Length: 432
Ligand SMILES: CC(C)(COP(=O)(O)OP(=O)(O)OC[C@H]1O[C@@H](n2cnc3c(N)ncnc32)[C@H](O)[C@@H]1OP(=O)(O)O)[C@@H](O)C(=O)NCCC(=O)NCCS
Image (tube, rainbow, N blue to C red):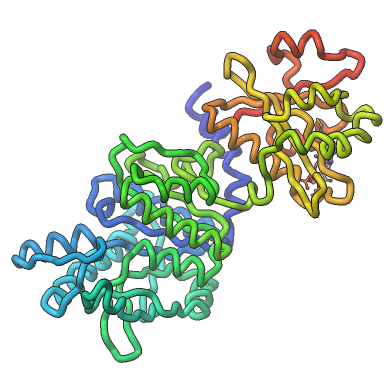
């Protein structure tokens, strides 16, 4: 395929994402290690692009590295308590200066508009202000944290008005109290609080990490909690996950952690199916659980009418008992209302999506799509990137969910023999 053809194909593939993201609110926190890196300018171009595509942007920056540098230049040692810097009166002026320098640099970069660059004619309108009210962290373990603070309030209505007028909001990790004091706030926590206050569609953390770190494609909040509890998980990553879980629990739809060491990581995460970071969400997996042997009766009750109607292939109770470990179910008021099986093929090259069924009374509410997402998630966890399914009546539903007809798909041997040609099922597959 020529470069031009590949570009056209990619651009068409991005169309649904462009439409989906338009007019949505994204809160993006950029670690300051990244702001000082060579790849930063690429991110500036990508932020301008998102603004042109009609995405409402709130950009926040961290300042940890700059503060360290300023303090050490001025021979000031920072004291830490519970891993939080104590911003005392001596260091505060330097902390404020460091934060303002990062902010000014960001402002200058986002104001570029040189011809023959991706910023040509971009004319981004940045707005900053006293949108964040802070308050003191107070005394922790007997130690006064002085000007280290936490978020008290976000002026979300004002921010929303400005976003509606196509301004981009730029926030530093400073908060001002009602008594007129300045507080140094943890940037990740501030980003999460802002996303919660705005009920943002996405909270995105742009990180700059060396890649010995294992990046999962997707994590549910449950999986995040396991990682947070695991002492082997890197300390900074744990605090990031804590903020992510907090945001999701307060109705922020998705959190992404993106490693921007990969040039264009943000664009890949937002506009391609594969993405380039970790997406944390509960939207799809909420209410879905692994089936166990006690669910066999409930599943049989759900699928029997569909088997009788020739929509699903028949499964005996014995077969279902053997396969129960592959099943996911959704239960409501003690009744199984939806199920699906994700069956990995022996060589682990693909998974079969089987026995997808939603009870009649609960259809068209997105349960089918959520189960499909769960199957995709389970497959990715096994490093499997290909799904197939057999269907007689539901091919259009699968087509609308990214499957294509695959008459030449190499069905696993046990499927070929048991595959009942009379049913004239269509074989469909999906790259995930
Ligand atoms: C297919 C099925 C699992 C979808 O579950 P669901 O929870 O209703 O699906 P969602 O809510 O995610 O999606 C609903 C959308 O799919 C559409 N849809 C449902 N069944 C469809 C079908 N057979 N063909 C095409 N589109 C279909 C609905 O019209 C709706 O579209 P809309 O939102 O544009 O109105 C469910 O209809 C079902 O259990 N069908 C019987 C069993 C079956 O066919 N299983 C597949 C076996 S291979």
